Length: 287
Ligand SMILES: [Zn+2]
Image (cartoon, rainbow, N blue to C red; front, side, top):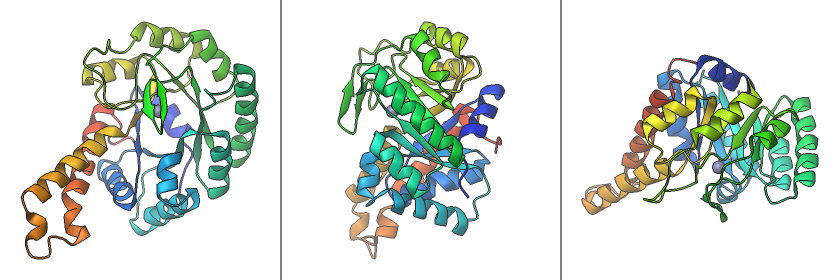
């Protein structure tokens, strides 16, 4: 059964650790993240972008697959299925499809329209027992074609959006999606501290977790980050392990071309990476 992300994130914020959101791309990805969560007794959030959902043929396919896997695999830890950077339309598609959590990314709208749409979606989510994430300011880098520069959110604007009744708040603190450039200045802890002072108990979300040094991650958790999104890092280790397998000519040996064999090293790499992140975030044993 899926749960909303509200309770797991409130516990994380109070307990000074963070729950990982691991984005899924296919059945293999989903299976490895669930295995990692169950093995480490960690709560987990499965993130699905609009692009990934389109790839998997639709939000309904994703929701039905995840629910069936939780059942067939005997998963006992709390699992939330969360729409990542959802458009207004995608939010309703996910509510319909049976997701347990959504993120409404209204950064393309003027602030008044963003607030109005956020409020409306908060009401729908509350009635359905779903959790909802909002974003203040644009988070840099590229995600599904959306490009930003790694800016810092205005803490007062964060407070205003938090007060609308969202369950978690993503705010730009110099973080960006994808790989970080060599001249990246690092996270702005000053901004994070100011946001946390104003928003109190609100679990804060750190997007673009790939490539942020471990000590910065730990400091961010100490300053109120309770959810960290990881996507690119799993893609990189999957690709690397798969390349090694093919470069070693293993697909040419015996039945090495069987997808269950060919994808196995990449799958193992995803699982190991997810466990490594859960240990870093401190969510191990918190299910
Ligand atoms: Zn993001």
